[in-house]
Length: 167
Image (cartoon, rainbow, N blue to C red):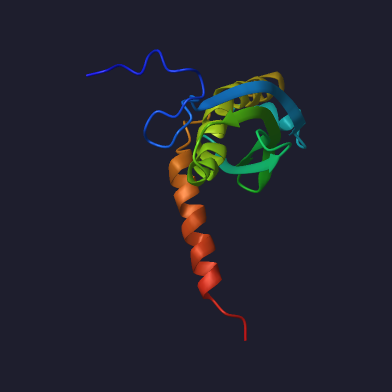
């Protein structure tokens, strides 16, 4: 069988592709917004006999910068409370600029809303942990997030909403 290794770069390889390898590159990562509030400090820093309740919200947004560059923002919000007292509230919007090329169009949304935030998450997690530690609390170590499940849930919600007609 003949090898196609000597084909010129960009030459068709028989399946309609030009031979360009799909690529996903992180061009930049940045903190867009970081807020830490501890409204009850220093009283909120005292030890407690049980763990506080912690509510965590996650959101992902993506915007095109050009036809091959995208700005993806991962928003993490964590609010710790004990009884009615807010111990801390931390919010982070962590962004990344990604160069994406060579993928079929139908793969772009999963790449933007699953793969890109998956690459950003470890860095955002570390920033949240350091912010809570610097605020006088134990570091908040967020559990891994299943961005694929989040994406599937969002698609299902959007489809359900499009079926509901306003009368």
